[in-house]
Length: 120
Picture (tube, rainbow, N blue to C red):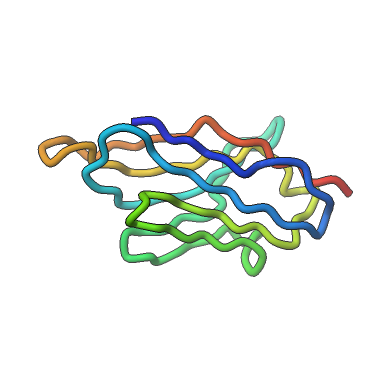
């Protein structure tokens, strides 16, 4: 299973971007999904997570500006980012806990990352 993220890019401060991430390969079920980000010289931090029951949790720095959602039929997770700030500049990676088959174990998977750059 591989996760493919898309939607990153360059945007001016105050603008919006929408990230999406979907797995390729065998997927029996997905529990938690999320987005993390890592800026140069910094550790990777949680941005937003969403559970199988659609409960969400956000980093304080993005509350009220970012919205995470999931389409269970498409096994896709989205991150709508509004009112972007230069400090949101980072590589954004998606994360999923996937059970690849009925008898398979639940494993953690990470996407390759997509660059988001916000200019002032």
